[in-house]
Structure formats: structure tokens, C-alpha cells
Length: 397
Image (tube, rainbow, N blue to C red):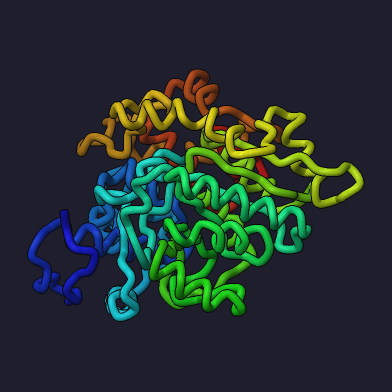
């Protein structure tokens, strides 16, 4: 197990004692670079094996390897942050008494690692052991009704008293009610900005209490202000660390339904509290129930669904999730078919796509190409903003 902070990096890496420290530094540098999100990060990792290899390939600028040839075509879109900026983030994080947790670390949450394109690095402040416990996420609107917030407090407190950790987004309304009720036994707040960017501002006292008695976490870099897109990205983490997500009130177009959608895609349980059809805040939850979410009126409705999962976890089994470990690495020697004649393969794929969804396995079956070449081509098209890849499907823009 390696420490959560590193010695400052110099140009010749002389201050690093192990290759693993260097690799973690480069993971952080790569994910903080412009136009590199989790999807691009893991696509590149499949091709090059390590973050260190990726950065070396970007810096080299020339190679006979087809992977590097393809990388040259997208290199202008990837703007590596400076070594000094990463050193500064490491120092700021340490001074803020927070820690950087990498997807390669033992303490990285197991369930989060199972989602599609998990955050390669999360910044945490508080009790890291909460990430290893059984977690239920509770979400709802900022303008939750009085009854909705009362129910959120009641169900959160009861779950907490049953050794279930409550996670939410520290927003106004339902989120805050769930955090307050579960603070005594530990609660997890997932933020949309940097670990030091408290939002909303009125929750500063709650932030202090959670960082002392619970856990604050984020995938955003230190000092990064929250943006609209980062709230959506945060929602996938709220659902991703949990066995299930409970939605208490949600309009048809609410962020809470986005979190529920992520939970469904991640293979997690979705629970919803029914409400009056006359209340627009309940139309989303009522729809979730019609579509198969478990209706929740009391704690037993949740426990009867998750207790079998908890028993399986205690027995050391992983069968409650699809346990097909995704290949993160490829052979050091790429397929000999991958030569410079194939660099227009991405364009060929793009021209064959329809304007609906196309499943990636269909492309593999139809074209019969090496996985490495397909990964490179799809990565190039995604970085060029010509396709969207989601749930193993491609959508042409």
C-alpha cells in the first residue's frame, strides 16, 4: 500500500522512490489534462498499458507503433497539465488534510470501480473506512416538500442505525436532510467541485461536520469550481458507490432521475417513494415505480432487497454484480496488422454508422478487426466529438 501523497516531482523524476509513485503521479497528471476524461483515460490505458506509457507517447511525438501514430492524430486535443500544477495539487490536498485515492489503491471503493469508466482518482476528506461499508444513496430535489424532507430524515436515520452508510450530494433539501439524520454513524457527501469548494455556501457547517464524522469526496481537482456538467458526473458516483439508490421526490426532468438512470445502468437497486400525482415533484418517482423501481414506504422495503446482497458480500462472493473483469491492459506488442495503412479506419467506421444507436459487438462481428485497432478508432472519433459512446453503444452525431 502506498502513501496518498508523493514527493514533489522533478524533470528527471529523481525524487521518486518507486515506479508506482511515478505511475500514480502520471495518472493524476493525465486525468487533469485538457480533453481527458475517464472514458478517454481508460481507452488510452487499454492501448498503452500505463499512464506513464501514455504520457511518454504523447511527449515522444514519433513512433512506428500504430497506437502512437493514431495518438499523433489526436495529440493536439490532449493538453497535458504541467508537472508544477500537479505538484501544487498534491501539496494543496495535503495541506487541506485530504487524500488522493487512486483506482489502483486497495481502499478505492469496490463498487465504484465496477462502473463504466470510474474516476481514476478521487479526493477524500474524512473517514475512508466508510467506503468499505454497505452504502445506500438517497437523492431528491432541492425544493423538497416538508413531508419529503421528514421522510428523508426518518429513513436515513433508520438505515444508519442498521449499519447502512448514507450517501448523497450535500445539496439543499432532501440531500441535506439525509446527511443530517445519518451524521451520527457516518455519512458520505459527493461534491461536484474541488474538495475545498463548498456548495451550496450555506452548507459550510454541514461540510465541517461531515468531514469530521463522515467523508467528503470528489473526482474534481483541488480548487475546481462546480459546473453544470460536473453535477451530472457527480451523480454517477453517488449511485456508483452504493448498493442502491433511493429517490424521494423527483420531477420528470430532475437530476435525481439522472442518478436513478445511472444506478440502473450500473446494475444497482433503485427505490422510489410514491407521491401524489397532483404534485409535480412526485411524477418522476411515480414513473420510476411504474417502470419497475421498488416502492418504498418504510425501511423494510429496502432491507428486504439489500440484505441478500449484504450476506453475499460477507461471504466474500461477488456474484451480486457482473464479475467479468474488464481487460484494462493489452499485450505489449500490438497486432502486426495494425500498421499505418489502417489510420483511416476511424473514418470507415464513422461512414458505416447509422444515426441511431449501434452496439459495439455488432461492429466487432461485422468487421472482424483486432480490439486494439477498434479502441483506437473509437477513441479518435469520440475525442473529435463525432460520436458518443455509452453502455457499449455508439451514437453518431
